[in-house]
Amino acid sequence: MATTQLERPEQGGFGTRILRALKAMPRAWNRFWRLVALYMPKRLYARSLIIVIAPMILLQSVVAFDFMERHWATVTRRLSQATVSDIAAIIDMIETYPHDGDYANIIRIAQDRMQLKVDLLPPDPLPAPGPKPFFSILDDVLSTEITRQINRPFWIDTVGNSNIVEVRIQLEGKVLRVFVRRSQAYASNTHIFLIWMVGTSLVLLTIAIPFLRNQIRPILMLAEAAESFGKGRPMPRDFRPRGAEEVRRAGFAFIQMRERIERQLEQRTAMLTGVSHDLRTILTRFKLQLALAGGKPETKAALNQDIDDMQSMLEGYIAFARGEASEDAGHFDLEAYFQKLGEEASLHKRKLSTVLAGDPDVHVRPHAFARLLSNVAGNALRYAKTVEISANHGRGSLVVTIDDDGPGIPLEKREDVFKPFVRLDEARNLDASGTGLGLSIARDIARSHGGDIMLDDSPLGGLRAVIKVPA
Image (cartoon, rainbow, N blue to C red; front, side, top):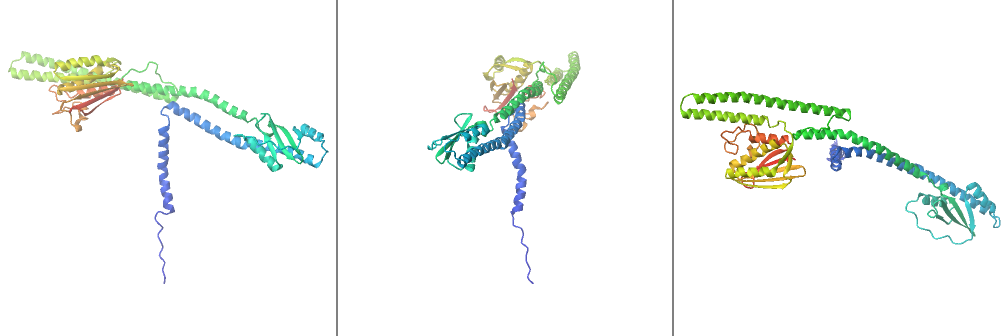
């Protein structure tokens, strides 16, 4: 008994290819939209204009194409057919009813009934064909209809007089010349439709663009207010929630968020200031008691040192708590600050070189920014012998680079030094009276300005600190 073995479907068959194509469609679709997003304008106003204008242009293009194809071309073709039919009827009358050269009645009928000016010319050769217009539907349609209905040698002129079309047809022993008004064979009112379509679009755009700009302006003002708050600057004076309901809600939410954050910062600063004040009172009392109490001088000196350390720590806590305290933005002179820093380096017998490119006057919170630079540059001057500082101010940003030849900070610990109360055992942040808040305060101030601090290897062999802030 013979048995047949069923064959497995071939790998990679038609069904498999369909499945692969279906799986690839989402990736292709995402790739297409990423490409569109790459070339799309980045600003909201430009994108909104595209959203308004693109559908209008697409709709007008479809309507114009449909109008040209269905109305203009069809009407022109039918008018040309009727005109050629009248000319064919005149030819039939001339050839059917010869009048021994007297065709006055035919000419009269053609002029009165058909609005055609007809002449019979001697049998001279037809003129040479002229240059064909680049785009003339009348020339094409009229030539096609004469060939189809009359099928005799002919010559037409649709380029000469703008209101008259001349047609010459070769007959037996004569040439028929016909002058036709262009409006009889051509839909000449098409431009009116196009003018109305383009004109109404311009009117709509004239109304839509200012309205769209007014709707986007509140969003831009909200973004400006949020950016100012992120940089530690006061809110713009003319800012208030306006525009559509959703934009107003976002504006009110931003104002409430700002008030909550400022209130929280004020409460934190007030609490730490009060606690520090109370603790400093107790420390002062300890100092007085130690001064009046007896005991060994070594023990008293150690206790006094502990009290001084605690007082220094309290001042560090207060400085950290006030890192985001409100301060009005003003002008800060980098050149004057670098001179002051150079004098400080000379006192500590350190080699300092500074380079300033751009405007030395920057718009920041002066006291906070001075503390930021002092904390970072102070660490470099404390633990290195050679320090190089370069500042580049331009295009709305300030970049300060501080290089030194000190011991540096290990790569895995560079982010940890920005955490509050972190001290390194064998690095620049070690200070007998320190609290580990110097770099924390510095980054806190930089970020309150809308910038940041980054650490890297220095060409001098130590550490590089890069401060970037909008200015």
